[in-house]
Length: 300
Image 1 (cartoon, helix red, strand yellow):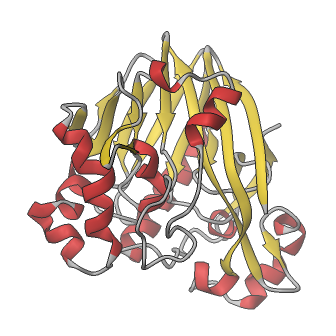
Image 2 (cartoon, one colour):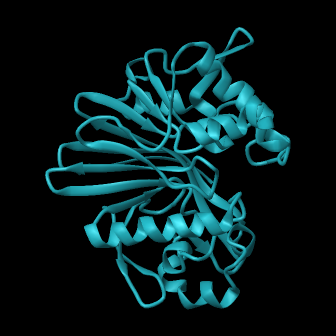
């Protein structure tokens, strides 16, 4: 299901735009979140349907999207999707996928030539594909003036020094070579570890598990807060039961620990939780519950 969508909200003085490239079924519910039994999805059916689960076919719904954050006079992109015409033989959904994130950004009033920063919450094919584009057979940065913020642990793990993820997944070498290495060659990469403050409103923090360098971006302005959690969450089921990791997590236990920690803070500090792939409203406030957390209120 192709769907063009732009959603806007504000966090104090920070403006957020959600630019959706695609929404639809991504996998069976149990394949996406292996530790979640059918009874769990059924228990929370009213909260998962229609935006996040098709119960008849037992399909989890997802979104491919980029978040645009305007803060302190700068334009920041949070993750850049799959890209166009990438060789991803290990993932039919991403393999040679057509796409036009720059065009959709322009439609949303965001000029790719004026993007100041790109945040890759982690290095996976659906988070840094539009870091680059093909110009006369060469991959070059899509955002010519931007600095690209890369978590050091992922840059090492998925790069040549880490053996391109140790060869666990066939696409990791391709991903690094077409979407990350060109940014380094262009001198636009900023590799960070242990935390990185972007400005007075934005700060990056490690949240390892999904990948070694998985990170979250925290926003705080005029008493309002949000946290962009990348792939700590693929489905609202993982809010309701944070011990359940996705099938894509390299360290499921570590991911569950990071998820629990981030959600606890989000509930305590009333942060809006902004996952990378939630369809429907896309962002949600959470509250503490007996077994995990509750979906308190979706973003407008």
